Length: 339
Ligand SMILES: [Zn+2]
Image (cartoon, rainbow, N blue to C red; front, side):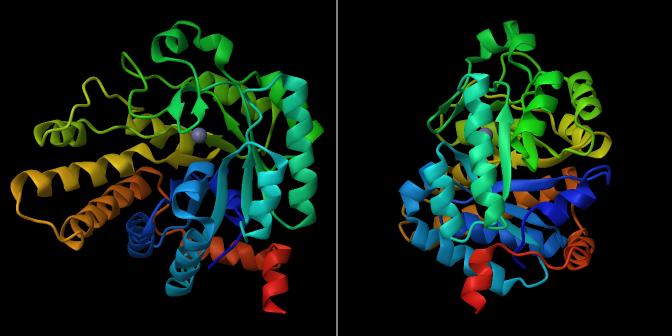
């Protein structure tokens, strides 16, 4: 069931769980995520990045997401633009049927970030679409979103974290629906040199200055060592890959106002490890179904593991009820198509 993230975050904030936001790039990944959510009765956010639009073509992605929604009427699903960089892209996505968009102006000077985020909110809210913005600086690299390198990031962490007072000012002046915060997470598979530690005190401070504002954690893959070992065992080369420990993410969604957790790297890792294993153990195999199929199953298992970590398993029905209680709000795109 398609919806915005509003009914999801209404329940997740203070409800002891978080919504997983998973990036879709092709059919197998889309199917794997939805299959896991259906099995676990969990709501989810399917995110499309600018890179995914370029790689797969939005028409194909949209058709796959529509199929996933139609096949799973009991699963609350939001379609979200990940790291939108211009208001024009936000408009395009609203016209493509997204229910949620991100405008990431965090790499621009503060006043510029306020300006573009407020503009995105104006455009999106007029169409019934919700907006996520970002404040602070993450480490690592994600497609064309380049943060700080691990060493520099760890050394100057305080400087890059989201400023709680600024967050309050930002919320007031933009009217955003959720805020991606820098609290020590990082994009990619090589997040940290040492053990990662999230700045929970910073999250508490932001919750005090911005009471009720759903917070978003980007770069929240945990890069499980057993998958790195598999990749390396079957011919890969990913030394020193490190992520955010799962118990820290579990704590962030259970105890704090973190409502959305972005996970992409771990799905890629599961997929890559499985494909490498098939290639290494069955060198004669050349039917794509026989390596993409097992890869899809590996992603499903990874997503299930994440849904339990986020404590969102079993929450579908409650989210649908909340959506109904809100009067079943839908972006104008869907009202138009239904008419
Ligand atoms: Zn991100």
